Amino acid sequence: MQVTALQLRDFRNYERARAELGDRLTVVAGPNGAGKTNLLEAVYFACTGRSPRTSTERELPRHGVGVARVTLATRDEDGAEHLIEAGFSPGEEKALRVDGARVDSLLAVAERPLVSVFLPDRLDLVKGAPSGRRAHLDSLVAAVWPVRAATRTAYSRALAQRNALLARVRAGASSVASLSTWDVELARHGAQLMADRASAIGLLAPLFEARGAQLGLAGDSRVEYRPRSATSTAEGLRAELGERREADLERGFTAHGPHRDDVRLTHAGRALRTYGSQGQQRVGLLALLFAERDLLQAQRGRPPLMLLDDVMSELDSARRELLADLLCSEGQSLVTTTDLDHVPGARDPGTTVIEVSDGTLSPAPRQAVG
Image 1 (cartoon, rainbow, N blue to C red):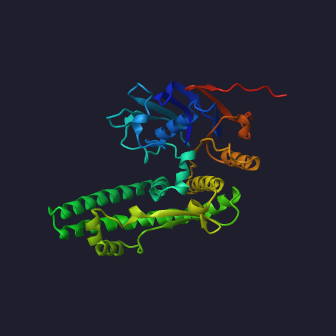
Image 2: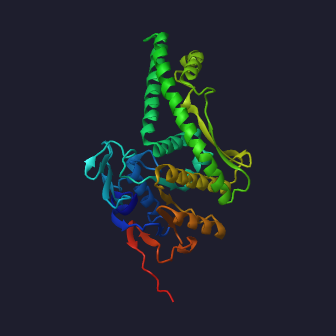
Image 3: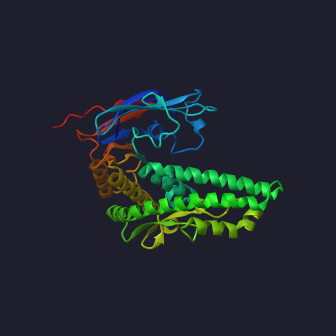
């Protein structure tokens, strides 16, 4: 599945813009503040129905305008063309359509491209709080096995119900015994969620180690699933919840379960989050994203669209060459830069270059050769 073209209307600093993408590498070039990152955000928004930069989606419409829209033209493996539309207006439900038909979510839609994004802010996946890594892992599970996305939703619903019941019990409006039903429900979905996460990390770990070594993390690079629970069964998790019931009643919320899990990235036996340099954390994130690309290629037969924002500027020339080779080897990618010379192959005939200037997009003119 490839994106052939995109159209933006009143998205961030774009009033109206359209661009065609290349089959492999597309370089988005322009000065700082021109809208390069906004363009990647728009593509991600149309692929997933959410922003990779903010949970405050009211920021998406252009200043003074109420509605933001992004449209992607895509082509599947059989050559069939599709249209994905994503719109947002504050106070209203997001308008998501595929080939003209409204959908509630894009995540399980077969016609959408899988997508992976690198933004400087996404270093929080390496060095930030566990919640971001949990959400990222659950997104990977949903991408690898779309039918399993429902497990995370069911667990979240059961957790919200148990927390609401804890509040009622504390207020004397319900009995403690009523918690048993939600302990069973939470444990049932929680055990499946942990199994899904463990399966994904089990497949991802050797790929992450290989990509880490390839990208220059000397020594072993590992990604590990760190569940809060000591058990892997629903019955065991239910028992753990029962043991902690009094503490949960004192706190007023459920403090134990898969919603407290973490994912640990290490290099040479030390946590990248704590001991990694900024450069090592950056390479660690790239290794993670490329390992996920490898996993999706192996499991789904379709690598994700790679969106990489300002990734080349802090890499040395050898790593730039390696990264460019990886981007051109499989699938489709968009890379932003302020300087085309920072992206190896950017001036090659097979590379598409889009110039960004103050919220406008235009194909870059080809330089004469010879």
